[in-house]
Picture 1 (spheres, one colour):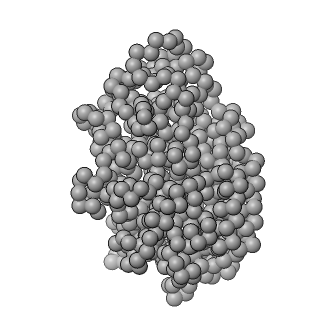
Picture 2 (cartoon, helix red, strand yellow):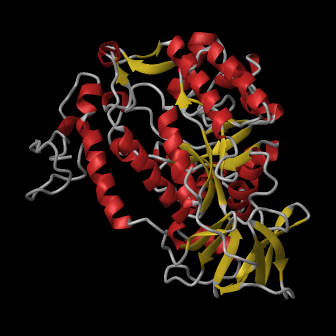
Picture 3 (cartoon, one colour):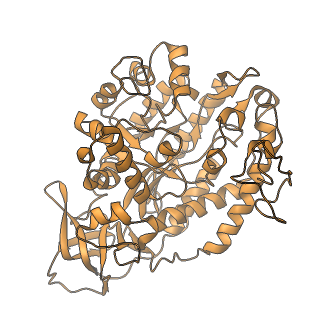
Length: 517
């Protein structure tokens, strides 16, 4: 296992115009505050530190706060752009056609490419002030699930960068498939999925607590409609035995809800509860398509089931909003007593943008600007994630907590006036406003530079790798249309070698098929 970046020797004092401290179970703002950490742990938060220190860092007009906890953190070259304006998804390569399944799905990306995309994505997470990440990647272009080998590489990468992670390869016993008539069904291969679960359990047993505790583990079954009852029962039992979180994407689409209802006669939360699956270590990204909301006419107690189980909803407003969805709404979920944490699940993995989008959507859906406040979302992105992981030593700056610390600049040209730093962040900030990140007492980013990362070179490599993925889409799209018919351009492309350069499809006026994209 590679060594994490070295910790500074001796106590380090950080000071800024604002500090997010923690007192009596909630965050507090300290003006002209100080934070001291030593050997990976916070020792002081407040003003007027009287002890000796080995290093002092003054950040001026900035906010020193706890690192964000991303329970659905992008660890991929995100394919959202391919579906952003190209719908419906089943016609655009987002659901495997039956003939592709029967011919045998293939791995489109190589092990080396998988290792690179994790490294690239982990660095971007750090740049956005995310200090604890539970990675998520697309299985659209995988042969089936993720592998132990790639997650062993991911553990090494996280350790080398100093990122705190919870890792576990995604597995499933089924997958959505589009039939020749355009209907969506599910194809199952239960033995394959159960074998992958066994491998995931062994990964947890081998990797838990490695890299001096930076690397923890989780179980990560794929979307609820791609799992059989036996897989879910065994996953729940393994999660309890191992004491690790279990993340399950649930209630994120109408297709998922209808498939589960058709196959099992109940909603996804009702089905999970009937299997004894839900508990306080269960993480449920999305929880958007649930009974009793504008999305689902069927009556039921889906949200109450989730709440009473102790499970946590992982709220991912940016990716949901891009697809036309949103929970209805954050303020109501909070008032019901549901546990709420945050995930990004898309590019960029900008937690600030997610909180901003979530606030806007919640206020629009509630028809009331008072339905949610800035601190509600900041709590979810920090304390909410820590509590979901059973980690009172994360998500807050207090003596005894781990030194996961971020510095958010408040003096950039777009910031505007600062009265309250959290409200300013949620009004005008960006994830790229983080200048310094400390994880477990290690400076993993300073002055927006991450040791060993060449951002320009990585971006160029990512673009080339992404184009190779795009080139494979016709073989795994219903009807196997040419790439130009799958990926439309915003406007007709005019110019030599403009845009992605793989296919050279001529633009056909009036068809919306987009030139070379």
